[in-house]
Length: 242
Ligand code: UDP
Image 1 (tube, rainbow, N blue to C red):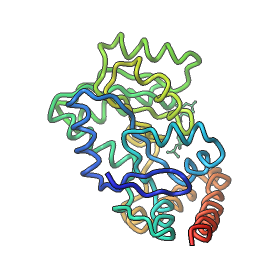
Image 2 (image 1 turned 135 degrees about the horizontal axis):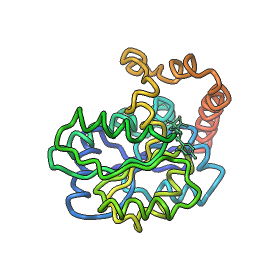
Image 3 (image 1 turned 45 degrees about the vertical axis):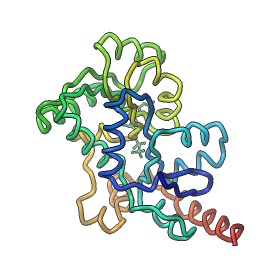
């Protein structure tokens, strides 16, 4: 698989469909692993934490989530096949899993949200088996591992705890869950449950999903100010590579 290196993070150059096919073939062949969907904020966390960078780069799939990563790849002359938003990858994976009656476990978000997300996904994708759910505000990680095992195991676990918590949780606890694939997906359960609305297609098609989110949740301004800074670092990196 071709990779694009952006400030040390090795992104896989795949389309959403290729990512889903790769994920499905790993699940079918009973290999174990996890998927990460870094946005500029996560790349920034990696730059400041070598151990976290290792966890991200060790993933089975590293998908470019967001237009900021695509801009960065263009600046650096690295080849990617467009953005693969975590939420879109997740929904296509669910559609493929449903056709094979696979088992999905949902972990994360506030109490009640994962159940609602699960009910919505099962209604939309008949054949999908919801193995179980757990909210994202637990103190003992073992409690979640036990809950997944007690539910009879899962083919896939969506881990939606925000970064870097979700990536660290998957790396450390993934093997003990017995699940074949874990996917770190940020606020996706809030969207699948209908708790938060996703930007309309026009905004995301034009690389403006971040602006839509900012208008809806102005408190995100601090987090978003990191994006211009991220692009400054990318330009500096470009300078060094010349
Ligand atoms: N969250 C959680 N446990 C925590 C912290 C956060 O389950 O200890 C959830 C939070 O409720 C939200 C998600 O993780 O559903 C993170 O959402 P955010 O919008 O930060 O993620 P993004 O989509 O921007 O990566």
